[in-house]
Image (cartoon, rainbow, N blue to C red):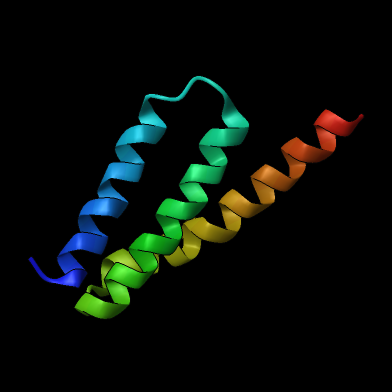
Length: 74
C-alpha cells in the first residue's frame, strides 16, 4: 500500500468516526481533520473532484466550529 492509499483510508476512517459521534464540537474538529486529509489525498492522487469538495467544505467546517465556540462562551 502506498502512502497515498494510506492517507485516503485514514481520511475515510475519519469520516466514518464522525458519523459515530454524539457531540457537535468534536465532530466538527474531526471533520476539519478529515477535510485536510482528503485535500492531501486529492492533491497527491490528482483526484480533483475530491480536492474541490474538501477545499469547499474546510472553510465551512472552520466557520461552523468558530460559531459554536462563540456560542459556548456566551
